[in-house]
Length: 441
Ligand code: XLS
Ligand code: NI
Ligand code: NI
Picture 1 (cartoon, rainbow, N blue to C red):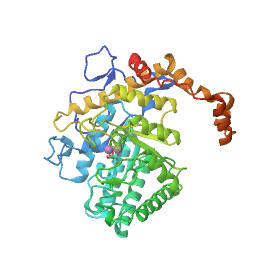
Picture 2: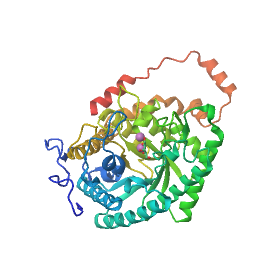
Picture 3: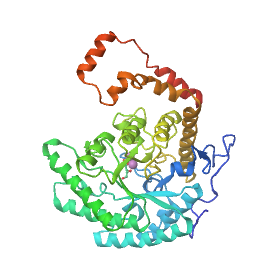
């Protein structure tokens, strides 16, 4: 059901529906068919698509070389509460017209930060009350909330990892307020992305102390949320750099270490972002697989980077083959644990029509839907799965199986190898695997 505020911000655009791949209507889904079942689950449930409040409603396209280019009508009021309400109206109009069920937010995406913590908290309480009404009218939910611990100059030396305790405490206060807000609107998860939790120079950094403080801080946040009855999952969102030169939660493997080193494995999983994987010199599917192997594939921030430059361009997903490889991991590991697909992506600086926001999200949703359908076909109908398991068949019986089960010693390997002689050469067949993907896409 489309929910409008006092003003309609996206005039002339109605509910986006599925019309199939034969449709030429740019404002229709070609592949995302919310109720279509794939492996017994609807696309809606598989994906739990979410709008990112920050990019979609706050980011006006500014870059280091020039100011924003986009004039958002919901930004017109100079009164912060009125502006926040207009923004919420735009959010719910957009989400419900898209047929999505979720949004994700930072504390100060919803309403502008005030001069004091006390005033900021009051503002957040006001907008949370307003958003609750809108949720009631629409059924739209919060996939996750988070605190922006990276934009304000006070966080220039880090938040939980700051060398100054006063800043650490301020970050703690902000997380408490953001957790309260997330819980008040029924947020299903809570994210920590440590943009400034890292360093610019090791010369002025006590890395061990900073990392221990992050571990302490995450435990405090989790304990507080539990004491307030929060049942959701916490996600760490890895990223190797930007804005810090080196961020502590560099990639999935490093973040899993953070989680385990500080005893957080009961409550924390990962939120994997495509472009962050690229920046860490990994593929997206690699990061998903690392998370899944640890039982920590929690959520996804969907976007894409750029092959020619090295920063977080946050473009909308449109690489079907890349996402298909990701969907193979996704389906085989049983999907996401608690999270969903959040479009952490922004339209380009020169995409200045309001309708471009719709076109971008339609493309992103269709890319995931098409990739899911292809991955499902590959798993069901192609020789892919049997080729893959066949590759490891030497561990299915005999000494191979005994090795896998930990029943052999190094001396046993020696005797076995001695008797067998030089192993035969077996092709890895990468090109054939790639051809199969191509054939089904
Ligand atoms: C920035 C991150 C950020 C997180 C939320 O690169 O992707 O947007 O998702 O703080
Ligand atoms: Ni992100
Ligand atoms: Ni990012």
